[in-house]
Image (cartoon, rainbow, N blue to C red; front, side, top):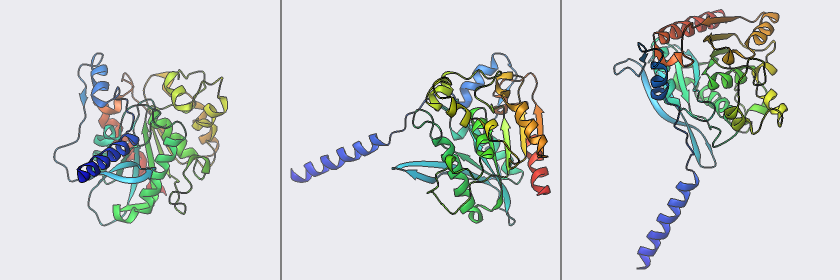
Length: 315
């Protein structure tokens, strides 16, 4: 009876621990739900999925960081090769509240087929942690990749960050805050840099409070309040507030939706003033989530590949 009681106590304690680390999830945004929505207007589109046969090696759910018992994971995509290659950190979208790293896997796999070493990253969403924690998570993932560069076959001096939609907003903020300790967990691999050397923004805003911006509830939930309540936070979270002469080369792949271009013209002007290389690739007559579907996926893949080859070969 005493042993049975001990077992019950242990099981109860385990249950309490598991409940303590249960991650709140919003599953409203997935590749499938985005496809069903876009298909209504674009019936000929095709959802891109992982290839069943590929020479790319996939290592899933690698723990890159633990926070109070909460593990954060990334997936690695690479081809076995002798020479070190540049890395791409891929950040999924979902309004800072939904989505997950699997949504970036098809793009990561096919970029890896072209020789890049790719990582799809899990980060804490707004239901779990508000700004800037998710930014710190992705910067920690950059540190992890750089610290383990040799084991992944990565050239630690050449790391790009790529994001889609809200993930593009995050990627842009990450790229424009190289060396800014406010946006990173300085105690995590404290001697390792979280700097990135290139940015790919796929239809993501660069300014939250802007004439073109239509950000509302989702931004409020991530930033912790409205612009009237927290103007400093809304400005701090905007990449446009940080772009300067040290911002890395940038690629913008854009839809025709003006709301997702908020701040881009001003951002590009600052890049031009500082002679920083950039490209803008429009995707006309496409849904906001065009990177998930053919026919646009192939053009996104080509644009990213060519841009990064240009940037890193010049370096």
